[in-house]
Length: 191
Image (cartoon, rainbow, N blue to C red; front, side, top):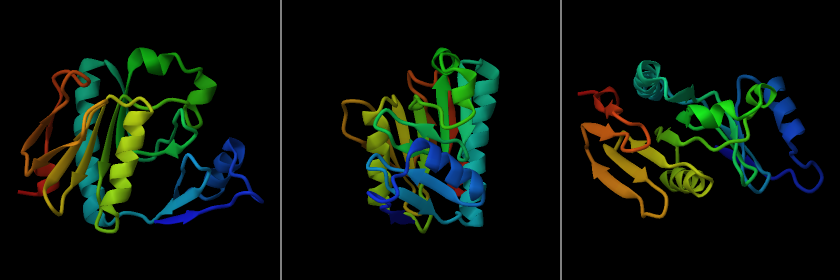
């Protein structure tokens, strides 16, 4: 991951960031709340396999319940603090999503997802991902999971609580945010 500070000579406005993303579709880009550009390397094949398994479980549950909209890692969201973030998987309750005008949904929708997952790849820095999960919660997310496959740990983030650490869990509950959703972590652990 590389963070570039383009200020003050090249401020990274919403329009400039959108154009930069369109001009470089093969790059995974984010903008933090300070306006800095963050470029992330593609994840490895194993991380991609794991991430697809996580997203597929979320998508299947959402298709069955129709309570919201599920998103993969290519979706970007403009958080209330101005950051544009792309969690590895996300979910937004249906009435919140439908309240966003269709034109705004086509870009980086101005909303913080209700639920986010970040999957740590071998090249990721854990402390940076922990700060990112805290940022989601501070901007309105109701539940967030940071999954660390190498150490078989999950950090669970909720508003007004310290993160909760689970060591080698087999399942995670969507609690009162994703009613009746249970994530099977065998897709990540590989057992």
